[in-house]
Length: 134
Image 1 (cartoon, rainbow, N blue to C red):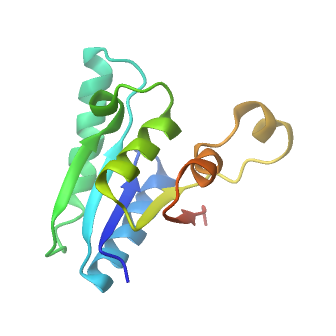
Image 2: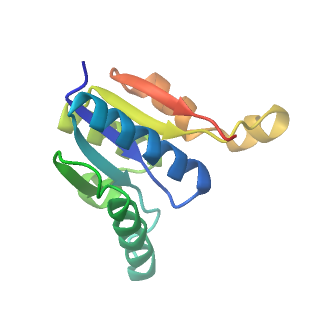
């Protein structure tokens, strides 16, 4: 069913849960996995943190026997906004399933802060699995 799975990570606990789900799905369907992270600014500190997040995520994929790829989306796509960069990566890699964590914001916090996951639902044509906190 799924040949290419992408998961967005940011170092948070919910992103770790999303990564775990993506790994399980990739194993189940023998699908290639792309782990994507977006950086806000192109400064060296953010790049280093982003690469650390990706490397930690990559170390969790040791059980996978399929292709695993790491991608710093904003650096590669040069777009403003996390959702736009992830959506461009999804389109470029022809992803069948995008896995993202969502923080369950409610009320005014959701109104003011917004949600990358919610934005992705409107920007991506692929299937999306939203992983919620416990």
